[in-house]
Each structure stands twice: as C-alpha cells, then as structure tokens.
Length: 288
Image (cartoon, rainbow, N blue to C red; front, side, top):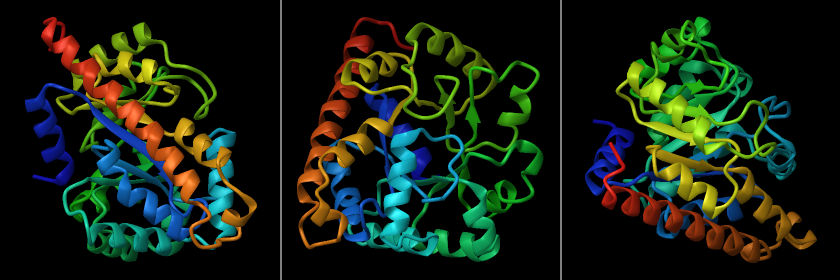
C-alpha cells in the first residue's frame, strides 16, 4: 500500500477529510521553501503538493504564476525540487508528497531518469496538468510501473462520456477542479461540487480531493463535509508573497522567516476548519 493510500485509509478511520496545502517548490528560494515544507505537517498538512516551477503554467492564475517565477529566479530546477523532497524525507517518512506541474520539465529532464530519481527522493505521486489520457504512454504508465501514483484532474466540463478515459489509469486519488478556469480566479460552489462528487464516486472507488477556488477556512470547512480532501494553493501562495521583503528575495539568511510563519498560520487555520467540519458532519450522521 502506497503512502497516499495509507493516509486516506487512516483518515477514513478517523472520519475526516484530508487537508492538502499546495506550495511552489523553491519559492522564494530553496532554503525558505524547505523550511516551510518541513513545518507543514505539524501545522496540519495531511499530504503536501509541491509545485514544479515552469515558465508557462497554463492552468495557474497570477499568484501561482508569480510564485513559479520567483522560484525560477532563485535558481529552482526540477533537480532542485527533487532535492527538496529528499531533504524533507530525512525527517519525515510518513507524509505523502505529490509533485504538481506540467509535462515540459519532466520531458526535458528525461522520463526514465526523472522517475528513478523521484522514487529515490521519496515522491509519492504526480499531477501533470497538460497530459491528457490519450498520452498516458508518455508519463502516466511509466510512473505507475515505477510505483508512483498518477493523479488525474476531473473538471466541471468532464461529462459522462469523457469520465471513463480520465479515470482509466488514475491512482492515489481523483483531483476535482471545483471551478472552470485557472487557480485562484473564482470561488467554489459547494452545491455544484457536491453533485459532481456524487457522480465521481459512482464511477470510481478512489478518494476525491477538491481544489481550485477554496480560499478561506469557511470554504474549506464546507467542502470538507463531503469531500475526501481539501486542497488550498493560491491563498497560501498569496500569503507568502504578501509577507516577503526585498531581503528575503535576495536570499538573505532568515529574512523569509516572517513569510514562512504567515503561511503556517494560515495552514493551521485551514486545517483546523477541515478537521472540525468533518467531525461535526459525521456526528450529525451526514457523511457516507
């Protein structure tokens, strides 16, 4: 059983949803990013998504685009992102790590080399936004063969005809994009998300995580009442950016501490909302 499967099984026993923060690897620079990722589990992260910085992130809004550019300007590469995961693993062997990004960096790096090094570093799963099911031979199937989960996105425009193709080689969990558009652009509609999750669960036994459009503790709590996981990215990335100083961007030692602490504060707020929401809902008999 993979780390991802073990985590969702444990949370099912607890009767609550997972909280999954997204942070950009290397933002604002490697040392600060590593310090943040290492502290996320204690702040309430059940799984962690780490963004792979890329120059043309078509599914991301301005906040995550800016985070990727900050990381690239500070020297972040795919190899450095794997180094980040490996350094995290020296102190945490339990928290699942998922890399989220676009195919270009993996292709340029070399798929076989990447998968070998990702497995060695301790990566558990991949979300590759721009690889459709028709291209599973490129990375999805090799990743599955290497023991990594390949997590697919379903969206409000994924109809019943398209859904079987989306789910065919998906593993780990399904990532439901709650809004049409880029990250951070709109807010999730709880009623619409709940209906969409019912259709997904009728078609797959995998846990369903909901992301895009969840910005506040209240929104996270609402989604946690019926989702298996809540993903928050743009709000955390924006909180980091709002607390960065010029010295932090210049990679001066400890200058990013305030920004890291601000992200951890918001992580605690969001994760607490997710945990408390699920327990209340379970107590009311409203959960499956």
